[in-house]
Length: 124
Image 1 (spheres, rainbow, N blue to C red):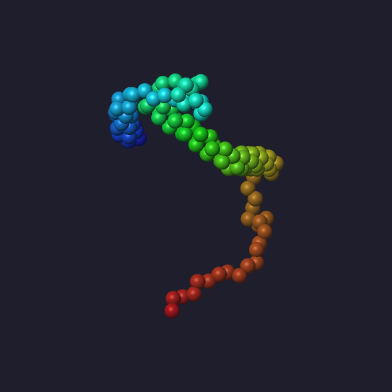
Image 2 (cartoon, helix red, strand yellow):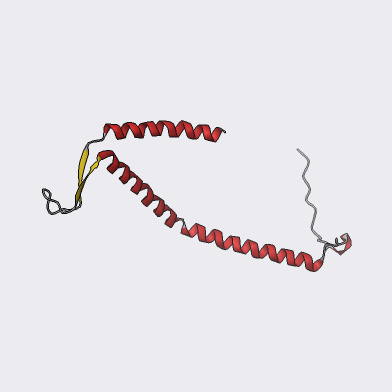
């Protein structure tokens, strides 16, 4: 519920800003892809200014997203490799559990470690 409210609080003003921008920038601009003939371009078409700017912003977001996705390839491949290793280890764990059964081992069969006990000295 809070997430929807926060989304609405962000998207509604953003939409109003976008509509205001589009209304204020309706004049047509000539978009030309002919660098040699400025007066008579071979390929040119008029577009409203807001359409051109929104198209460029959208293209920038797409190019940035693709660049970030390509940069994260190393992390995605490591995650896939570690996930495959985890699946293999889980399967091996299940195989070993079935092999030894579910019987509990008595305490006498556990190995005894002869290590000195650590003592906490009394406060001075």
